Amino acid sequence: MTPDPVRPWLLGECLSLDLRPDQLAPLRARLFVPGVLRDLTAFAGEDMLLSVLAERLLENVLVPPSSPGRPGPADTLQQYLSSHHARREEMAQLLREIVSVLNGQGIEPILLKGAQSLWTGQPAWRYMRDIDLLVPSDAAHAAQKALVAEGYHPDPDLPHRPHRHHLTPLYNARLSGWMEIHRRGGNRYAERLLPTEELARATTVSSDGGLSVGLLDPATHLLHALIHHHIGHSAFARGTISLKGLHEFAWAAGELTEEQRHRLVARASAHPWLAAVLDLWVAAAALFYSMPVNAPFAVRKDAAEQARTVLSVRSEAIWKYPGYGEEIRLAWAGDRLRRIDGGGNLVRRQVLRARVIASMLPKIRRF
Image: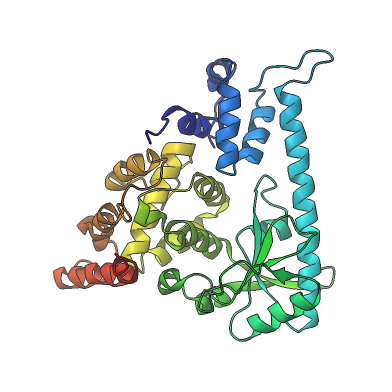
């Protein structure tokens, strides 16, 4: 399948985090061409970015005006946005009910990914399919049992996978999507890079209306999401990048304080693979969504070149793991390794390179 080079980059322009007033008129002219807006919104829907796109299009008046008595694109987008916010409100209410059940069992779940967005209300445009709660250790099974008793149920057609990092997904007629109780922060590959014990240490308790949950600090939350998208979902192996995950990353990175950015970079630099992944996503977010790059973030030349490559891939991989070569090249780069503690030593750099391979080895062995 030949990727369409137009729609992804047009989407990136519309969702730019640095969209200037002088860019609006030419962008508007492109979007007003018959068929372009329809194709763009369909593409955004496939990537679960239609809610934020609708918000930006309406905010910047980038859709044709409606005619008197005839609904137009703006009306359609506004209707979708209203349904999106209503869905989020329903999911947020169900999250509170779930937390109430778990609190009643003495369990304070740690909110992962979109669940934290539901709790805090930000960003309101974030779309999610499920609710992820981290309940480390044996308490995960107690949490699952308590929710089943409240009417949540597993899908009997899903295969039983007892060794996964989350328990069997649970469904409820009132929940638009599903929920997962995680006993670990990520799969075994992600766990090596960001252990569950570290997530627990980076958590503070948030109480509201008599309910209590754990929230990750912003830097750790962003790092966990980055690992989830890039490594947990094997995007690195396929040589692709999630446009939804990348936009969420770019927005969250812009919300970090200078101290939090330094903490994120320092933590990522504890592992050469993580350092490479963070560089890649910073470069990709700057290139695709015009994310402002504030120190200590930087757009590295090799990461920018790789970002252009992965952003051009819009189809399924022809062979199973085409992304490994470039991923290893980024993580092995001498300049990057020298920024890691002890990386000024040649022997130490070789040890770090071996560490990268060891982190990837279980997936490579699945050839």
